[in-house]
Image 1 (cartoon, rainbow, N blue to C red):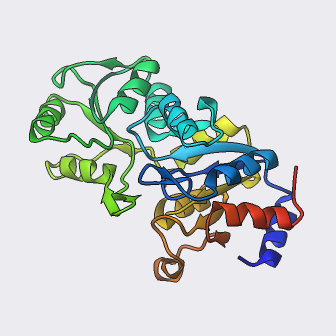
Image 2 (tube, rainbow, N blue to C red):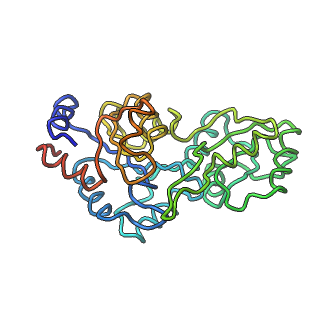
Length: 275
């Protein structure tokens, strides 16, 4: 990464007040911490507020923080914004407390319940809320179909087709959403990245404006494109899904590019910027 470019960005923004950081491909890969990522995150916390923004809907904020703490990352639940939390909060703020039926895992159920939504049978549901579900079955899809035919509306946590693992990519929540769409029902709203809803809530949690935050992610079409559209500067790290050659091919240009999180933080520090 060009240090002159870093200096120019710092001069233009007068220093970022917050850093919004993705998880998979930035901090961890396949559940294992990436080399030097924990130390880099600790240093980043010294430079500004850090918010963990992840499309992973399988865990709640508290579960995500605990899992990252176990891997050595200095993360508290109040720093975490998951797509499960975003879905529960968006539904509450837009529609009030609703009756929901869930295709997803424990974290999504926990956040919806915590927000005051009522978990009901498919026939009673006002909304079907879907996220990543590693135990997706034909029976669950049949239940979802009954809910839709009874008038339920459809909310999705995200459309990520895949996520990075040590042995390659694995199916993401987009595979679940796609299975439901195959029955003829598309989500009214998708709240995870690249939706502006995800970045708006992350900025609210951080207490900053878009031009005061830097989004750090590994996926051009979600982390980088979504943040850019929401008015944030962006940094692509090359430890996850997207590679440097994808930038020109996809036509999505991050503000900064770094080999990994440690490299990004080191270059920001070397540029002479600190709070």
